[in-house]
Each structure stands twice: as C-alpha cells, then as structure tokens.
Image (cartoon, rainbow, N blue to C red; front, side, top):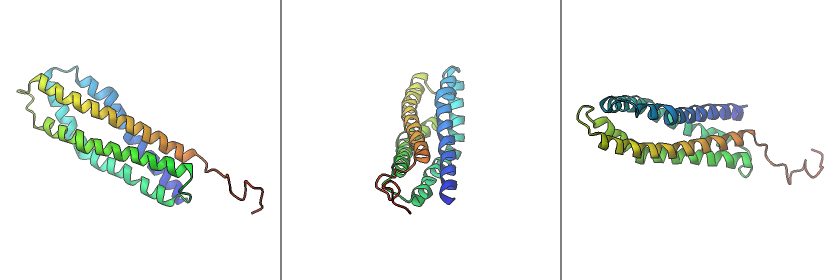
Length: 168
C-alpha cells in the first residue's frame, strides 16, 4: 500500500509540474511576446518573480517524490523500476538545465528596467530562455511518460516459479 501511495503522489506531482511547464511554454510566454515592449518586460519580470517563489519547492518536491517509489520497489532489475529511474533522471536533468541556464537568465530579467531596456537585448534574453525552457519541457514530458509507464508496467515473470509452472 505504501508503494501505491508513493506512486500516486509521484505521478500527481510529476503531472502537475509537467503540465505547468508545458502550459507556460505553449501559451503564457508566447502570448507575452504580443505585448508592447515595456509591458512585455514588466510581465516577464512579474512572472519570473512569482515562479521564482514557487518553482524551487515544486521541482524539489517532484524529484524527492521519486525516492520512496524507487526505495519501495522490490525488483530493481524489473522494467517498472528502470522506467521510473530514467524518469527521475529526466527530471534531474531538467533541474540541471533550470539551475545552470534559466535561473541566471531569470536574474538578468529581474534586473531589467521596463522603461529603458532595449527590445533587442530583451528578446535575446527571452529567446535563449525559451530554447532552454523547450528543452526542459522535452525532459519533463519524457520523464512523465517513462514514470507513468513504470507505474502501469507489470514486472516480468520470466524465470519465476510461477512461469515455470511450479506451485507456490
């Protein structure tokens, strides 16, 4: 039962994080590009500040939620364990991209003055941020897919007493 609860919590957190990241990539940030330059800078700064308060805990909780799932898995050689482990590695890689790429850009965005920032400078920053965010989304969707497959995949019974016809 503990393993099932851990799995559900893990999938809920991974799904929420992935959906949030995908939604911001697919709708929020593209919509901001349609704003006048000063409003675009101001909106990006507001979103960056808000996301900056919640995303560290959200990303950390999602990654931490893999630990009990993997720890409670009985067969470390089975497909469910391996799929979940690779899912975790995708989310860990996403966090690495975030910390080394997006967070430094976020710091620069927060320091911009909406009234004096040149549009070209701002768009160069946001274009780089968007490329990194796209990579993060690929990692998130891949991680969620693998984790979900790990949750629904039955361990192989090949080589077990049951598959050889032995009575248990």
